[in-house]
Length: 164
Length: 164
Image (cartoon, rainbow over all chains, first blue to last red; front, side, top):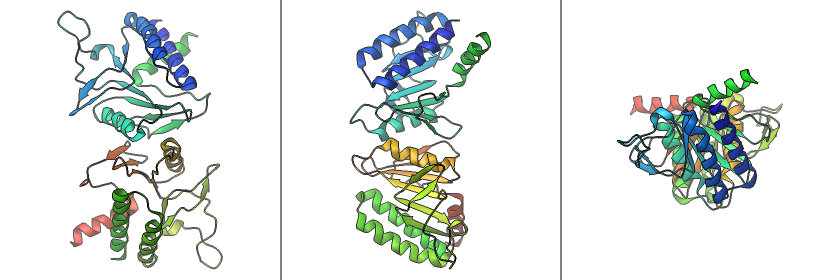
């Protein structure tokens, strides 16, 4: 049930970005709502502009999602300050003037270090590129397209189908 | 031997584009040299800005390479005017102001219709993205990096290694 809420929020969040482009305040606000759901769910946690350092590189994706058990903790059980690992899902939203090559390279760097999936959202072209170890890179530019999600999210989606 | 010359020319050609950006006259001149070699080789043929129409879409990549036996012919045995098929190798060189999303989508459209490999060259970022059905999308930004080529070119490369 919680997972259901989380993924619905994430979809809503991405849909908003996809339609309206990037608006930073919405960005933060929506992810706060999203995290409120996921904190109870203990499935995954989404972070806005979290610095992740791994493979000799430090990146700050627009949005990262970590499976619950992979979230680094401090000695009190809280979320650690330093994330020295690749996220499970990385999402980047192109902003005008940003180098798409640099952003794509960051996504591919994540995939080379265990990330399950990377989304590159181009709000101007209304297109989402999905990068993953497999299948080959795909693009989605139809509003009704069903976008693939990482395996850990897929379970939740299936659950949604069987319960509805 | 001819194949060897062809791929060496292609590498030289791409290297020039990679270093200096796109210069249209060089573009044409070099592909003319390249084709002079490949016409004898009967391995493949490279075309500059050739319109290819397939899968409900018409694209004009910067450079396409077709395996010899897949080149459409007219009744006299010459190269046909219309190419209603995907190339074996598609190469795009980003020019300033061009939508990288549109160019990437054209490459992925090719891959969805049988193209073995697509290169996306960003001269500003000195990066080549290699898209293929497998392995996952990779990037190359080290000057000394050995870039993967499609299977039909790989044979020629291996030949080169064993003969040298």
